[in-house]
Length: 300
Image (cartoon, rainbow, N blue to C red; front, side, top):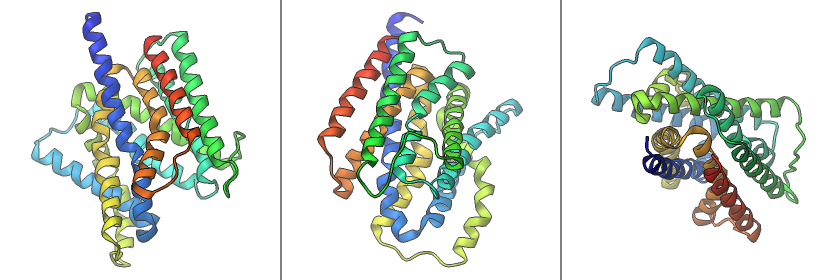
């Protein structure tokens, strides 16, 4: 591939990665819109099955063939990573940890994804890239820590036992799922990858959701249903299309660093949708994160 084509692919990969991160970053505000009225169990199980339903419709109407046996194993890894592992492990950990503390640990996800890209996809970033990646992740961890300071939730950079191990497991699961999904998207396409991953995981959710439905469909507002459909269709399904394509085009390690912007996108969306405050500290850290990502882009 020529340098011009390589640069164009990287630029497109970064833009697609940003589109995926933007889709994921709106998950929290829309979750807040829905969970207070629906409850966490109905929302979590329902969104997964809604995404699996959309995936199944796509696979049927496009007449996608069942993937080869070796691809099914890789799809199972994707499913375990991003459909089951990350959501379930974070939900389990959050029973014992405040959200701000969780944000500190999950802030390591871009760096861990870059490591997964190096180990599983055999990418070889430069030393300067790794330094910028560590600096960017460090800034996100510090920002998450400062966001939790002074409020009812306490935040610490010190690990606090089993709950933190669950969060670290969730981060590793997501990083591996991202990497395997990006590799498979070269062969199957990003939409097919996440579709098969969701369909494989769907049976796990069926019985628990049936038990939830036996208690009746919750009577909630239109805003709550908007939140439900967003996290089910966009966060759990469509958001992976540009994300996997971006990782494939621009390189897993490089494009993974745009995840550093996710906390700031989430805060911006919370400001617009929920009227939450947006302070100068957020803007300062956002600018610093932009600089680390720019350095990493040039230091490959």
